[in-house]
Image (cartoon, rainbow, N blue to C red; front, top):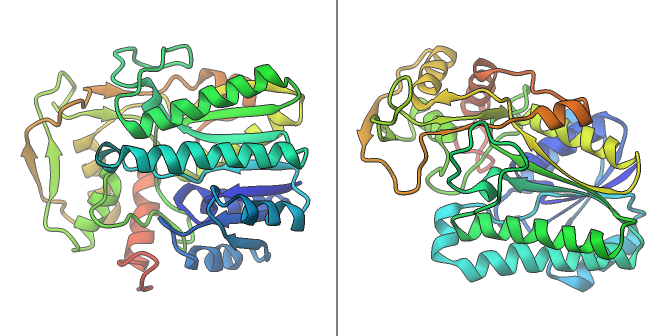
Length: 339
């Protein structure tokens, strides 16, 4: 198949690109590089040993996006492009709605114009908000608490309305829990701008010496060690879930929503211990007050994906820590400067 990847140079998109190429698909990447690096595309070609087309395009640039569809036959779209920092979304809500929602609107209109009705959408468990339904299944009501999560939910609603208006679409919505890890080669991985928003990249930067200590927000939660528990999923398991969703689209039209997670919870201190084991380095940390809005436990119920996509996460937190550390060691400054 000819697969268009929006945001294909980003963290998850780059790993999906590798898996798709290795599975024999042809890939076309569009990315504006606002939160990614063209270097990732060079490395993807090195890993997969196969060239692919790529374009610097923002999805809201309708003429540029149409030119890509005119230049290449497209069978399906994997839609990763979008801003994703929760804090920034609170500070700049209109930017997030314009980039994420407007960009997706133009993408869907363009797909329809060219007769492309297969899409796998990169959503997020943030659409569930501060739910106390643990583990969380897909029937849990959506209640996002920030503009980033609301932008994802708006796109899900838009896709649902589009399917109702035209049931010939094939749609798979994938709600991620906490993606971590990197490709086993260490050539591609997560390269956050500035201070990492997520736990594992922050731990990795402490381990490599870029930051002095880890901030642990709260140790008085009703959990086994007092720190928050989350469902971490290896990025390679995650993108293999996208490949499974792509196969599901071929079965016929539909609108389906799936959680992608392990179903297992790991506390902050357990992740610190796993990373210390993988890196053979001590991770100093300080306990700070809880952050507003943080919940004690968040884990996925991935039963539906296991049953309908025939997919299951296979890698554990030791694999996640090992692969993250390999990426961080080989690329202490991310894609900015190798080694």
